[in-house]
Image (cartoon, rainbow, N blue to C red; front, side, top):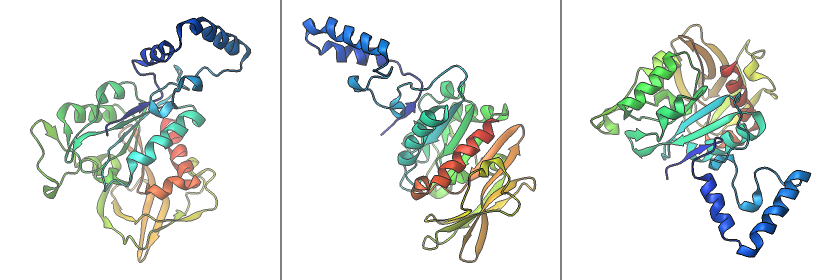
Length: 299
């Protein structure tokens, strides 16, 4: 299923509302409208009327949008190896919009790996303040990939979640890249500043703790108690940037590895976390980590 969720209004909203009103018997139209107006004036009906069956901002209805709201764009796809990002990111984005004064757009990719396409990507990116990537091993239409590269080159911030460390890295076994599509394996070393070197045991999960000397970082504000056990297996990475600031470490068996860090890619602020297993989104500390990372990236 292809989805584009946004806190910004989508075209056709007025049409849907007019259809709802058209279902009222004609003699009641005037009185129903008058009653709604009176209720609105006395403050008993919200501007986003539940009576009309309008859904939350995760389905494209504006609830919090204003001219000065930062716009966070999430790119995801439905993929059995992408840790249910299509289920965890939309409600997280919805909460971000409702509770933290952000405008959010979630775009779910169309197509089959290794060739994906994100509907309305270029026009959405043109109004974005932050790009969040959570998909894996995809090539994109050349124009869409160029738009992402340009967006980052302009100094805009980027957040990568879990599989973002092989987001554009298509391997031979992943299938042939169609004509007109391109991959971008350099995204990992050049933007995320790391190398993906493997994975820990699924059975071990990951014991997450604050890295030495990182407790005062603003992204870790409110991160108490300082350790939890993630059911997701650890991603083994090698940081290539000696200026990167490791915030969280993960332990699994004999492995100790960064699981959250910040860095700079040119003028762009970058945050990456290999956490993002479905259960992590049920953990308040993880949600707080992402929210603080978004605040930091946009600061």
